Length: 141
Image (cartoon, rainbow, N blue to C red; front, side, top):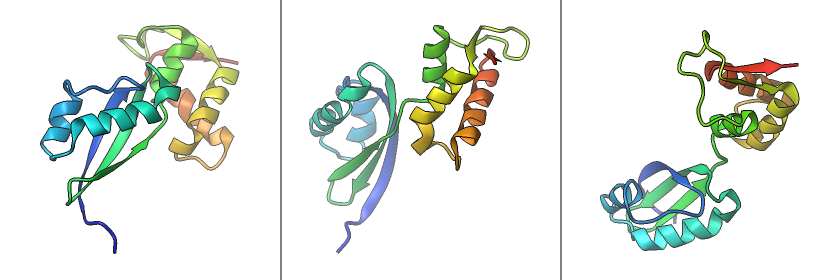
């Protein structure tokens, strides 16, 4: 028999650095989840993404048990890393904050492929280029 789902919690936590402090503690506490149990499991699974912001979707069951799925860091994080910037442009479309090459965009698309809504690498690269442009980052050939 399948477990009955009580709900979902979506969070963005730095890889390997989950702790009971906000935002993790309050979000999980109101669902009745054992916060320390989640933090230990998440930190063990997300060691590969140490220090990077990682989206996680937590499925909460009626019996207060939980499962979670870790996704890859957001495209904006990879784009800022490739352009060596702290943040995108304050005025995207008018002010260019930095630039990345098509090769770098392709590399980011390969890493994000399973989380993107694209059938092949070329489409995924276009999605990444669009994200970069909306951040005020130029794409160089």
